[in-house]
Image (cartoon, rainbow, N blue to C red; front, side, top):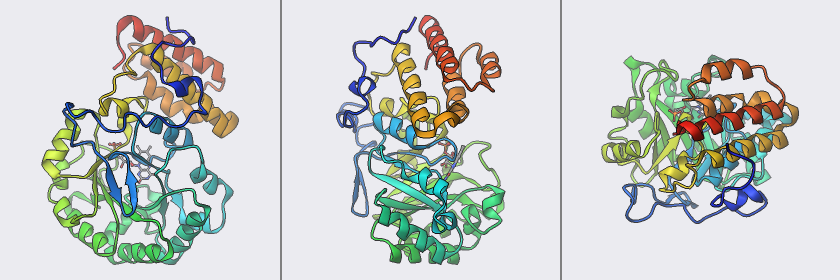
Length: 362
Ligand SMILES: Cc1cc2nc3c(=O)[nH]c(=O)nc-3n(C[C@H](O)[C@H](O)[C@H](O)COP(=O)(O)O)c2cc1C
């Protein structure tokens, strides 16, 4: 039964969260299969310790999760998408969402919008706050509320506007400006190559391509074949591949097929933040007792970040952590309305304890 007492090899930050980030395992060892694939990369003047990126995910990648993934060795994190317009109105809620201070740097704030001037003003304000190293522009969000304003993935239908946004944001800030987009709007209008050329010509300093169309949303399998040939259009500008990456073999395959400079990972690390340390060749986080401590630490950090609303906000992570458990459906049902953090921690303790006995943890 995992207890709260320390397993001998746990990282120091679990005991003392005030300790600085552990920089000891930011690239795989030379004998690892991922040596030379997971490596440092530079965006403009910003050096990333490695090319693993935590994907921006609204409702998931809050400050606590970005911090946790940084502890696990991820090289770069991005905020949840933030409305440029709301930032120009100085929306307290939006600014709070992106300004969490404890995460490791480098860190990007991601903006969405369709008005180049508002995007530029929002970016300039964010830069003034000195909370991030990079401004990323969302050109991939599929959500109706966003695309109906011409923002997110709708920009893939208006490349001239997308280019103008990049140019104006670049004029407004000194930090590098990057763009994240999809392979196209629909299966019949895949324009990822033309769009890549457009944003690179407009001055994007890194691009990330999610290998799905807007039409696909988050369904089906990522179409990695459409990532082939993109790097050749980027020259020296880093290209990050994204979509369904969840294990070392995926990094190897994507690297071979696309020559990408880095990898952005989203759902693969929800409920599994130790994925990043595994990709760096560090298996210190395999013990269920240690995983339980990480789970508990994660919830406690969220309580500090969000107050009482942390428990409902933690649910998406909770269900991720509980995945693969033989009784996960029952557990999900019993915890879906839970608001008491102690109950959630107790359920986690039981869950990881069962994993310890059945070796079900992966
Ligand atoms: C719940 C959720 C929220 C997301 N929010 C954002 C966002 O705010 N900005 C963004 O660029 N992409 C967002 N995405 C897309 C991810 O960044 C990523 O491109 C996508 O999930 C594919 O990567 P994956 O297969 O590794 O998850 C979101 C995805 C999910 C599942």
